[in-house]
Length: 333
Image (cartoon, rainbow, N blue to C red):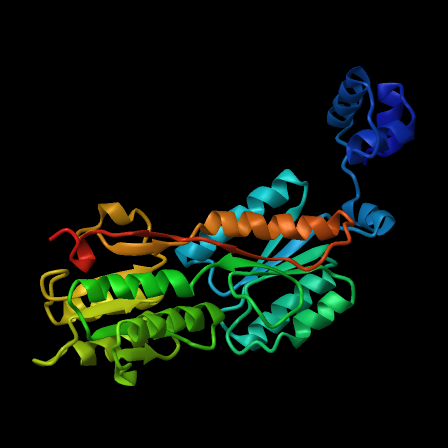
């Protein structure tokens, strides 16, 4: 196996120069750099990353834990994190928590044991934050993404309450006073904030909240489907439903299809987050869209501040989503 000495001998430079080229620790001339790179290619030299990590006390890796990377919004956040991490020379290690505290704890333990330089986490529902706080106090920087609160550290997410309030008021302006909310798990901070927006809109419009119109639970499509179907059956069915997430929206649309209800003719509908290529779906769905990629990239930028040794105060960033009014809420009619 080729060594750094073999590379230095072939390139006609010192081993320290080879190290500077490989690690980027000191500028070298372009001619020297090219000779070293050519010698690396010829000899097949591969740096021992484990030994290098021990020498530098860094692994050039960061951990990311989300509840379900299969969800479009989390997939875009992951892409944003990875984009910034790769540009900064870090490898991203990704774990799914499956919205289970025990699984999240195992993922965090595995990432910390691999000596990641920092962590970005979208905490699960019912997460106490104690483990993340302990990791942070032990010296590993932690950034919360999407789901804010619980740990005194850098955080980034979107505004949830105001946009959902505006969407409910928009439905009320269409003449609907009985509006159901497929709220999902209110132990998830984002879902709780969106529920708060729903309540604020009703209060502003002088409408007494009806707890029967708020569908809570795990927030999975099948659970939402069964609960919403009960609200859509019979002559007293609700005329409008807003879903707090892509998963709950799937359940609402399945329930409407089960009953043969057409959107927006029989049911007005809108949602937070959205489906990929939503403009290709008929009817086009009114959607609050988060800048998910930007949330991920901002989370990594916050982490890089810590990894680069900057001593700064904790920072919380809220990005603004956009509301696009389409056919499903009745605007097209």
